Length: 137
Image (cartoon, rainbow, N blue to C red):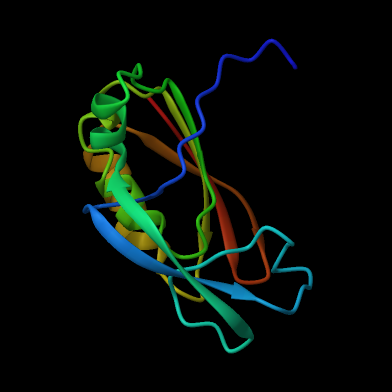
Protein backbone atom coordinates (compact mmCIF):
# COMPACT_ATOMS: atom_id res chain seq x y z
CA UNK A 1 0.00 0.00 0.00
CA UNK A 2 2.61 2.59 1.11
CA UNK A 3 5.62 0.57 -0.04
CA UNK A 4 6.30 -0.22 3.61
CA UNK A 5 7.82 -3.62 4.32
CA UNK A 6 5.92 -4.63 7.47
CA UNK A 7 5.08 -7.85 9.28
CA UNK A 8 1.95 -7.96 11.44
CA UNK A 9 2.09 -10.33 14.41
CA UNK A 10 -1.12 -11.18 16.23
CA UNK A 11 0.47 -11.19 19.66
CA UNK A 12 1.02 -8.84 22.57
CA UNK A 13 4.54 -7.94 23.74
CA UNK A 14 5.83 -8.06 27.31
CA UNK A 15 8.82 -9.28 29.32
CA UNK A 16 7.67 -12.93 29.32
CA UNK A 17 5.78 -15.34 27.08
CA UNK A 18 2.37 -16.86 27.74
CA UNK A 19 -1.20 -15.60 27.60
CA UNK A 20 -2.70 -12.36 28.87
CA UNK A 21 -6.15 -10.86 29.16
CA UNK A 22 -6.86 -7.64 27.30
CA UNK A 23 -9.56 -5.32 28.62
CA UNK A 24 -11.47 -3.43 25.96
CA UNK A 25 -13.08 -0.27 27.38
CA UNK A 26 -16.53 0.61 26.16
CA UNK A 27 -16.09 4.34 26.70
CA UNK A 28 -13.95 6.58 24.53
CA UNK A 29 -12.54 10.00 25.42
CA UNK A 30 -9.37 12.05 25.00
CA UNK A 31 -7.31 9.40 26.81
CA UNK A 32 -8.87 6.27 25.30
CA UNK A 33 -9.02 5.85 21.57
CA UNK A 34 -11.09 3.37 19.62
CA UNK A 35 -8.11 1.00 19.47
CA UNK A 36 -7.37 0.94 23.20
CA UNK A 37 -6.65 -2.40 24.81
CA UNK A 38 -4.97 -2.79 28.18
CA UNK A 39 -3.81 -5.61 30.43
CA UNK A 40 -4.68 -3.47 33.43
CA UNK A 41 -8.15 -3.56 34.96
CA UNK A 42 -10.33 -0.89 33.49
CA UNK A 43 -13.46 0.39 35.23
CA UNK A 44 -15.15 0.73 31.85
CA UNK A 45 -14.04 -2.60 30.36
CA UNK A 46 -17.08 -4.64 29.52
CA UNK A 47 -15.20 -6.92 27.15
CA UNK A 48 -12.19 -9.07 28.04
CA UNK A 49 -10.35 -11.33 25.59
CA UNK A 50 -7.32 -13.60 25.85
CA UNK A 51 -4.26 -12.96 23.71
CA UNK A 52 -0.88 -14.64 23.25
CA UNK A 53 2.07 -12.68 24.62
CA UNK A 54 5.79 -12.95 23.92
CA UNK A 55 8.93 -10.88 24.32
CA UNK A 56 10.07 -8.58 21.55
CA UNK A 57 13.39 -10.40 21.29
CA UNK A 58 11.61 -13.78 20.97
CA UNK A 59 9.28 -12.43 18.27
CA UNK A 60 12.24 -11.14 16.27
CA UNK A 61 13.99 -14.52 16.43
CA UNK A 62 10.87 -16.65 15.85
CA UNK A 63 9.82 -14.69 12.76
CA UNK A 64 13.37 -14.08 11.48
CA UNK A 65 12.92 -10.30 11.65
CA UNK A 66 15.72 -7.71 11.78
CA UNK A 67 16.28 -5.78 14.98
CA UNK A 68 14.35 -2.51 14.87
CA UNK A 69 16.28 0.73 14.45
CA UNK A 70 13.33 2.86 15.64
CA UNK A 71 10.50 1.89 18.01
CA UNK A 72 7.22 3.58 18.92
CA UNK A 73 5.71 2.20 22.12
CA UNK A 74 2.19 3.12 23.25
CA UNK A 75 0.89 0.21 25.30
CA UNK A 76 -1.39 1.64 28.00
CA UNK A 77 0.82 1.00 31.03
CA UNK A 78 2.90 -1.99 29.88
CA UNK A 79 5.78 0.18 28.59
CA UNK A 80 8.37 -1.04 31.10
CA UNK A 81 7.55 -4.72 30.50
CA UNK A 82 7.64 -4.30 26.70
CA UNK A 83 11.05 -2.60 26.88
CA UNK A 84 12.40 -5.34 29.17
CA UNK A 85 11.30 -7.87 26.54
CA UNK A 86 13.54 -6.14 23.97
CA UNK A 87 16.73 -6.64 26.02
CA UNK A 88 18.88 -7.64 23.02
CA UNK A 89 17.20 -5.28 20.54
CA UNK A 90 17.89 -2.31 22.86
CA UNK A 91 21.59 -2.76 22.12
CA UNK A 92 21.18 -1.61 18.51
CA UNK A 93 17.95 0.42 18.33
CA UNK A 94 18.88 4.07 17.73
CA UNK A 95 15.60 5.79 18.74
CA UNK A 96 12.62 4.89 20.91
CA UNK A 97 9.47 7.00 21.15
CA UNK A 98 7.52 5.98 24.23
CA UNK A 99 4.16 7.18 25.54
CA UNK A 100 4.16 6.41 29.28
CA UNK A 101 0.72 6.05 30.90
CA UNK A 102 1.45 7.33 34.41
CA UNK A 103 -1.93 6.11 35.64
CA UNK A 104 -0.47 2.57 35.48
CA UNK A 105 3.32 2.91 35.57
CA UNK A 106 5.88 5.46 36.76
CA UNK A 107 8.21 6.86 34.10
CA UNK A 108 11.32 6.77 36.34
CA UNK A 109 12.06 3.01 35.95
CA UNK A 110 11.56 3.37 32.18
CA UNK A 111 14.01 6.27 32.01
CA UNK A 112 16.47 4.31 34.20
CA UNK A 113 16.22 1.26 31.92
CA UNK A 114 16.80 3.34 28.81
CA UNK A 115 19.73 5.33 30.24
CA UNK A 116 21.36 2.13 31.54
CA UNK A 117 21.24 0.87 27.93
CA UNK A 118 23.10 3.93 26.63
CA UNK A 119 20.18 6.15 25.63
CA UNK A 120 19.79 9.86 26.22
CA UNK A 121 16.17 10.43 27.22
CA UNK A 122 14.29 13.65 26.54
CA UNK A 123 10.77 14.64 27.60
CA UNK A 124 8.77 15.63 24.52
CA UNK A 125 5.54 16.60 26.28
CA UNK A 126 3.12 15.77 29.05
CA UNK A 127 -0.58 15.44 28.38
CA UNK A 128 -3.04 14.63 31.15
CA UNK A 129 -1.60 11.44 32.70
CA UNK A 130 0.68 10.62 29.76
CA UNK A 131 4.36 11.44 29.37
CA UNK A 132 5.87 11.34 25.88
CA UNK A 133 9.59 10.48 25.81
CA UNK A 134 12.19 10.06 23.10
CA UNK A 135 15.33 8.03 23.77
CA UNK A 136 18.26 8.26 21.36
CA UNK A 137 21.70 6.69 21.10
